[in-house]
Image (cartoon, rainbow, N blue to C red):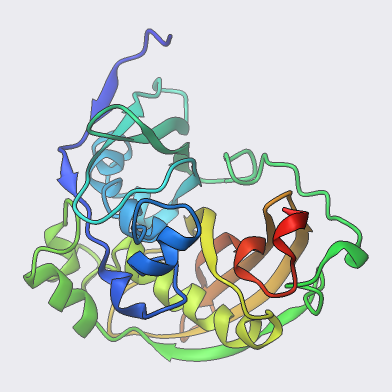
Length: 288
């Protein structure tokens, strides 16, 4: 057990607002139940929203400029289950710390690291990235390491974030998500940053993936020269890092980088998406 002081956020009943993604999504109750889950799962980026208040307490508003949050998801939650964020207090010389989230009953939801500056030793980047043989892949057989998933021009429209804020759907929201921030325009909540970067990558990745049900298993947001502000144009570059498989899933790691109108690298997202073998016609149940 650690002897460090622990910072914690309030309990929040996280919302599964992706439930309306429809049949076939892991967030849909029926689909999730067929795959052995208790119900439609709350997306990982929704849980990310609870971390910034604690991280600002530890690192100041610099976290939105040069900070990162790197999480590995351990157990899924369902709509309205209460969860809470925890973080070890770093020493004066440390730029990173351990963070995690627990359900109200103590179940570990996710764990990882957060800090300022270089994320090269983060929880996500410290994982084993050795790829499998391409011959082992079925669902992701057309996806290759180093493959570009495209460049996309987007404008960060705040309307969805504002609506979620007004409906109290964002767990532990900051006023900066709805009002002017120290940097001028409102700041993107973690879920909004993920949606813009991941959403761009899926335009290139989606058509390459055979029909299956997927879920996020790890993600890392990095503010390189942040923050990622609303009402601003960005160019999003996306590429595959590696592809692999486990006994029950095939997975792909991919990076997304956001650049502002001046060409400055503002933010990055590294994701691991898993495709469940049990959801694909390419696998016989007897193999799993």
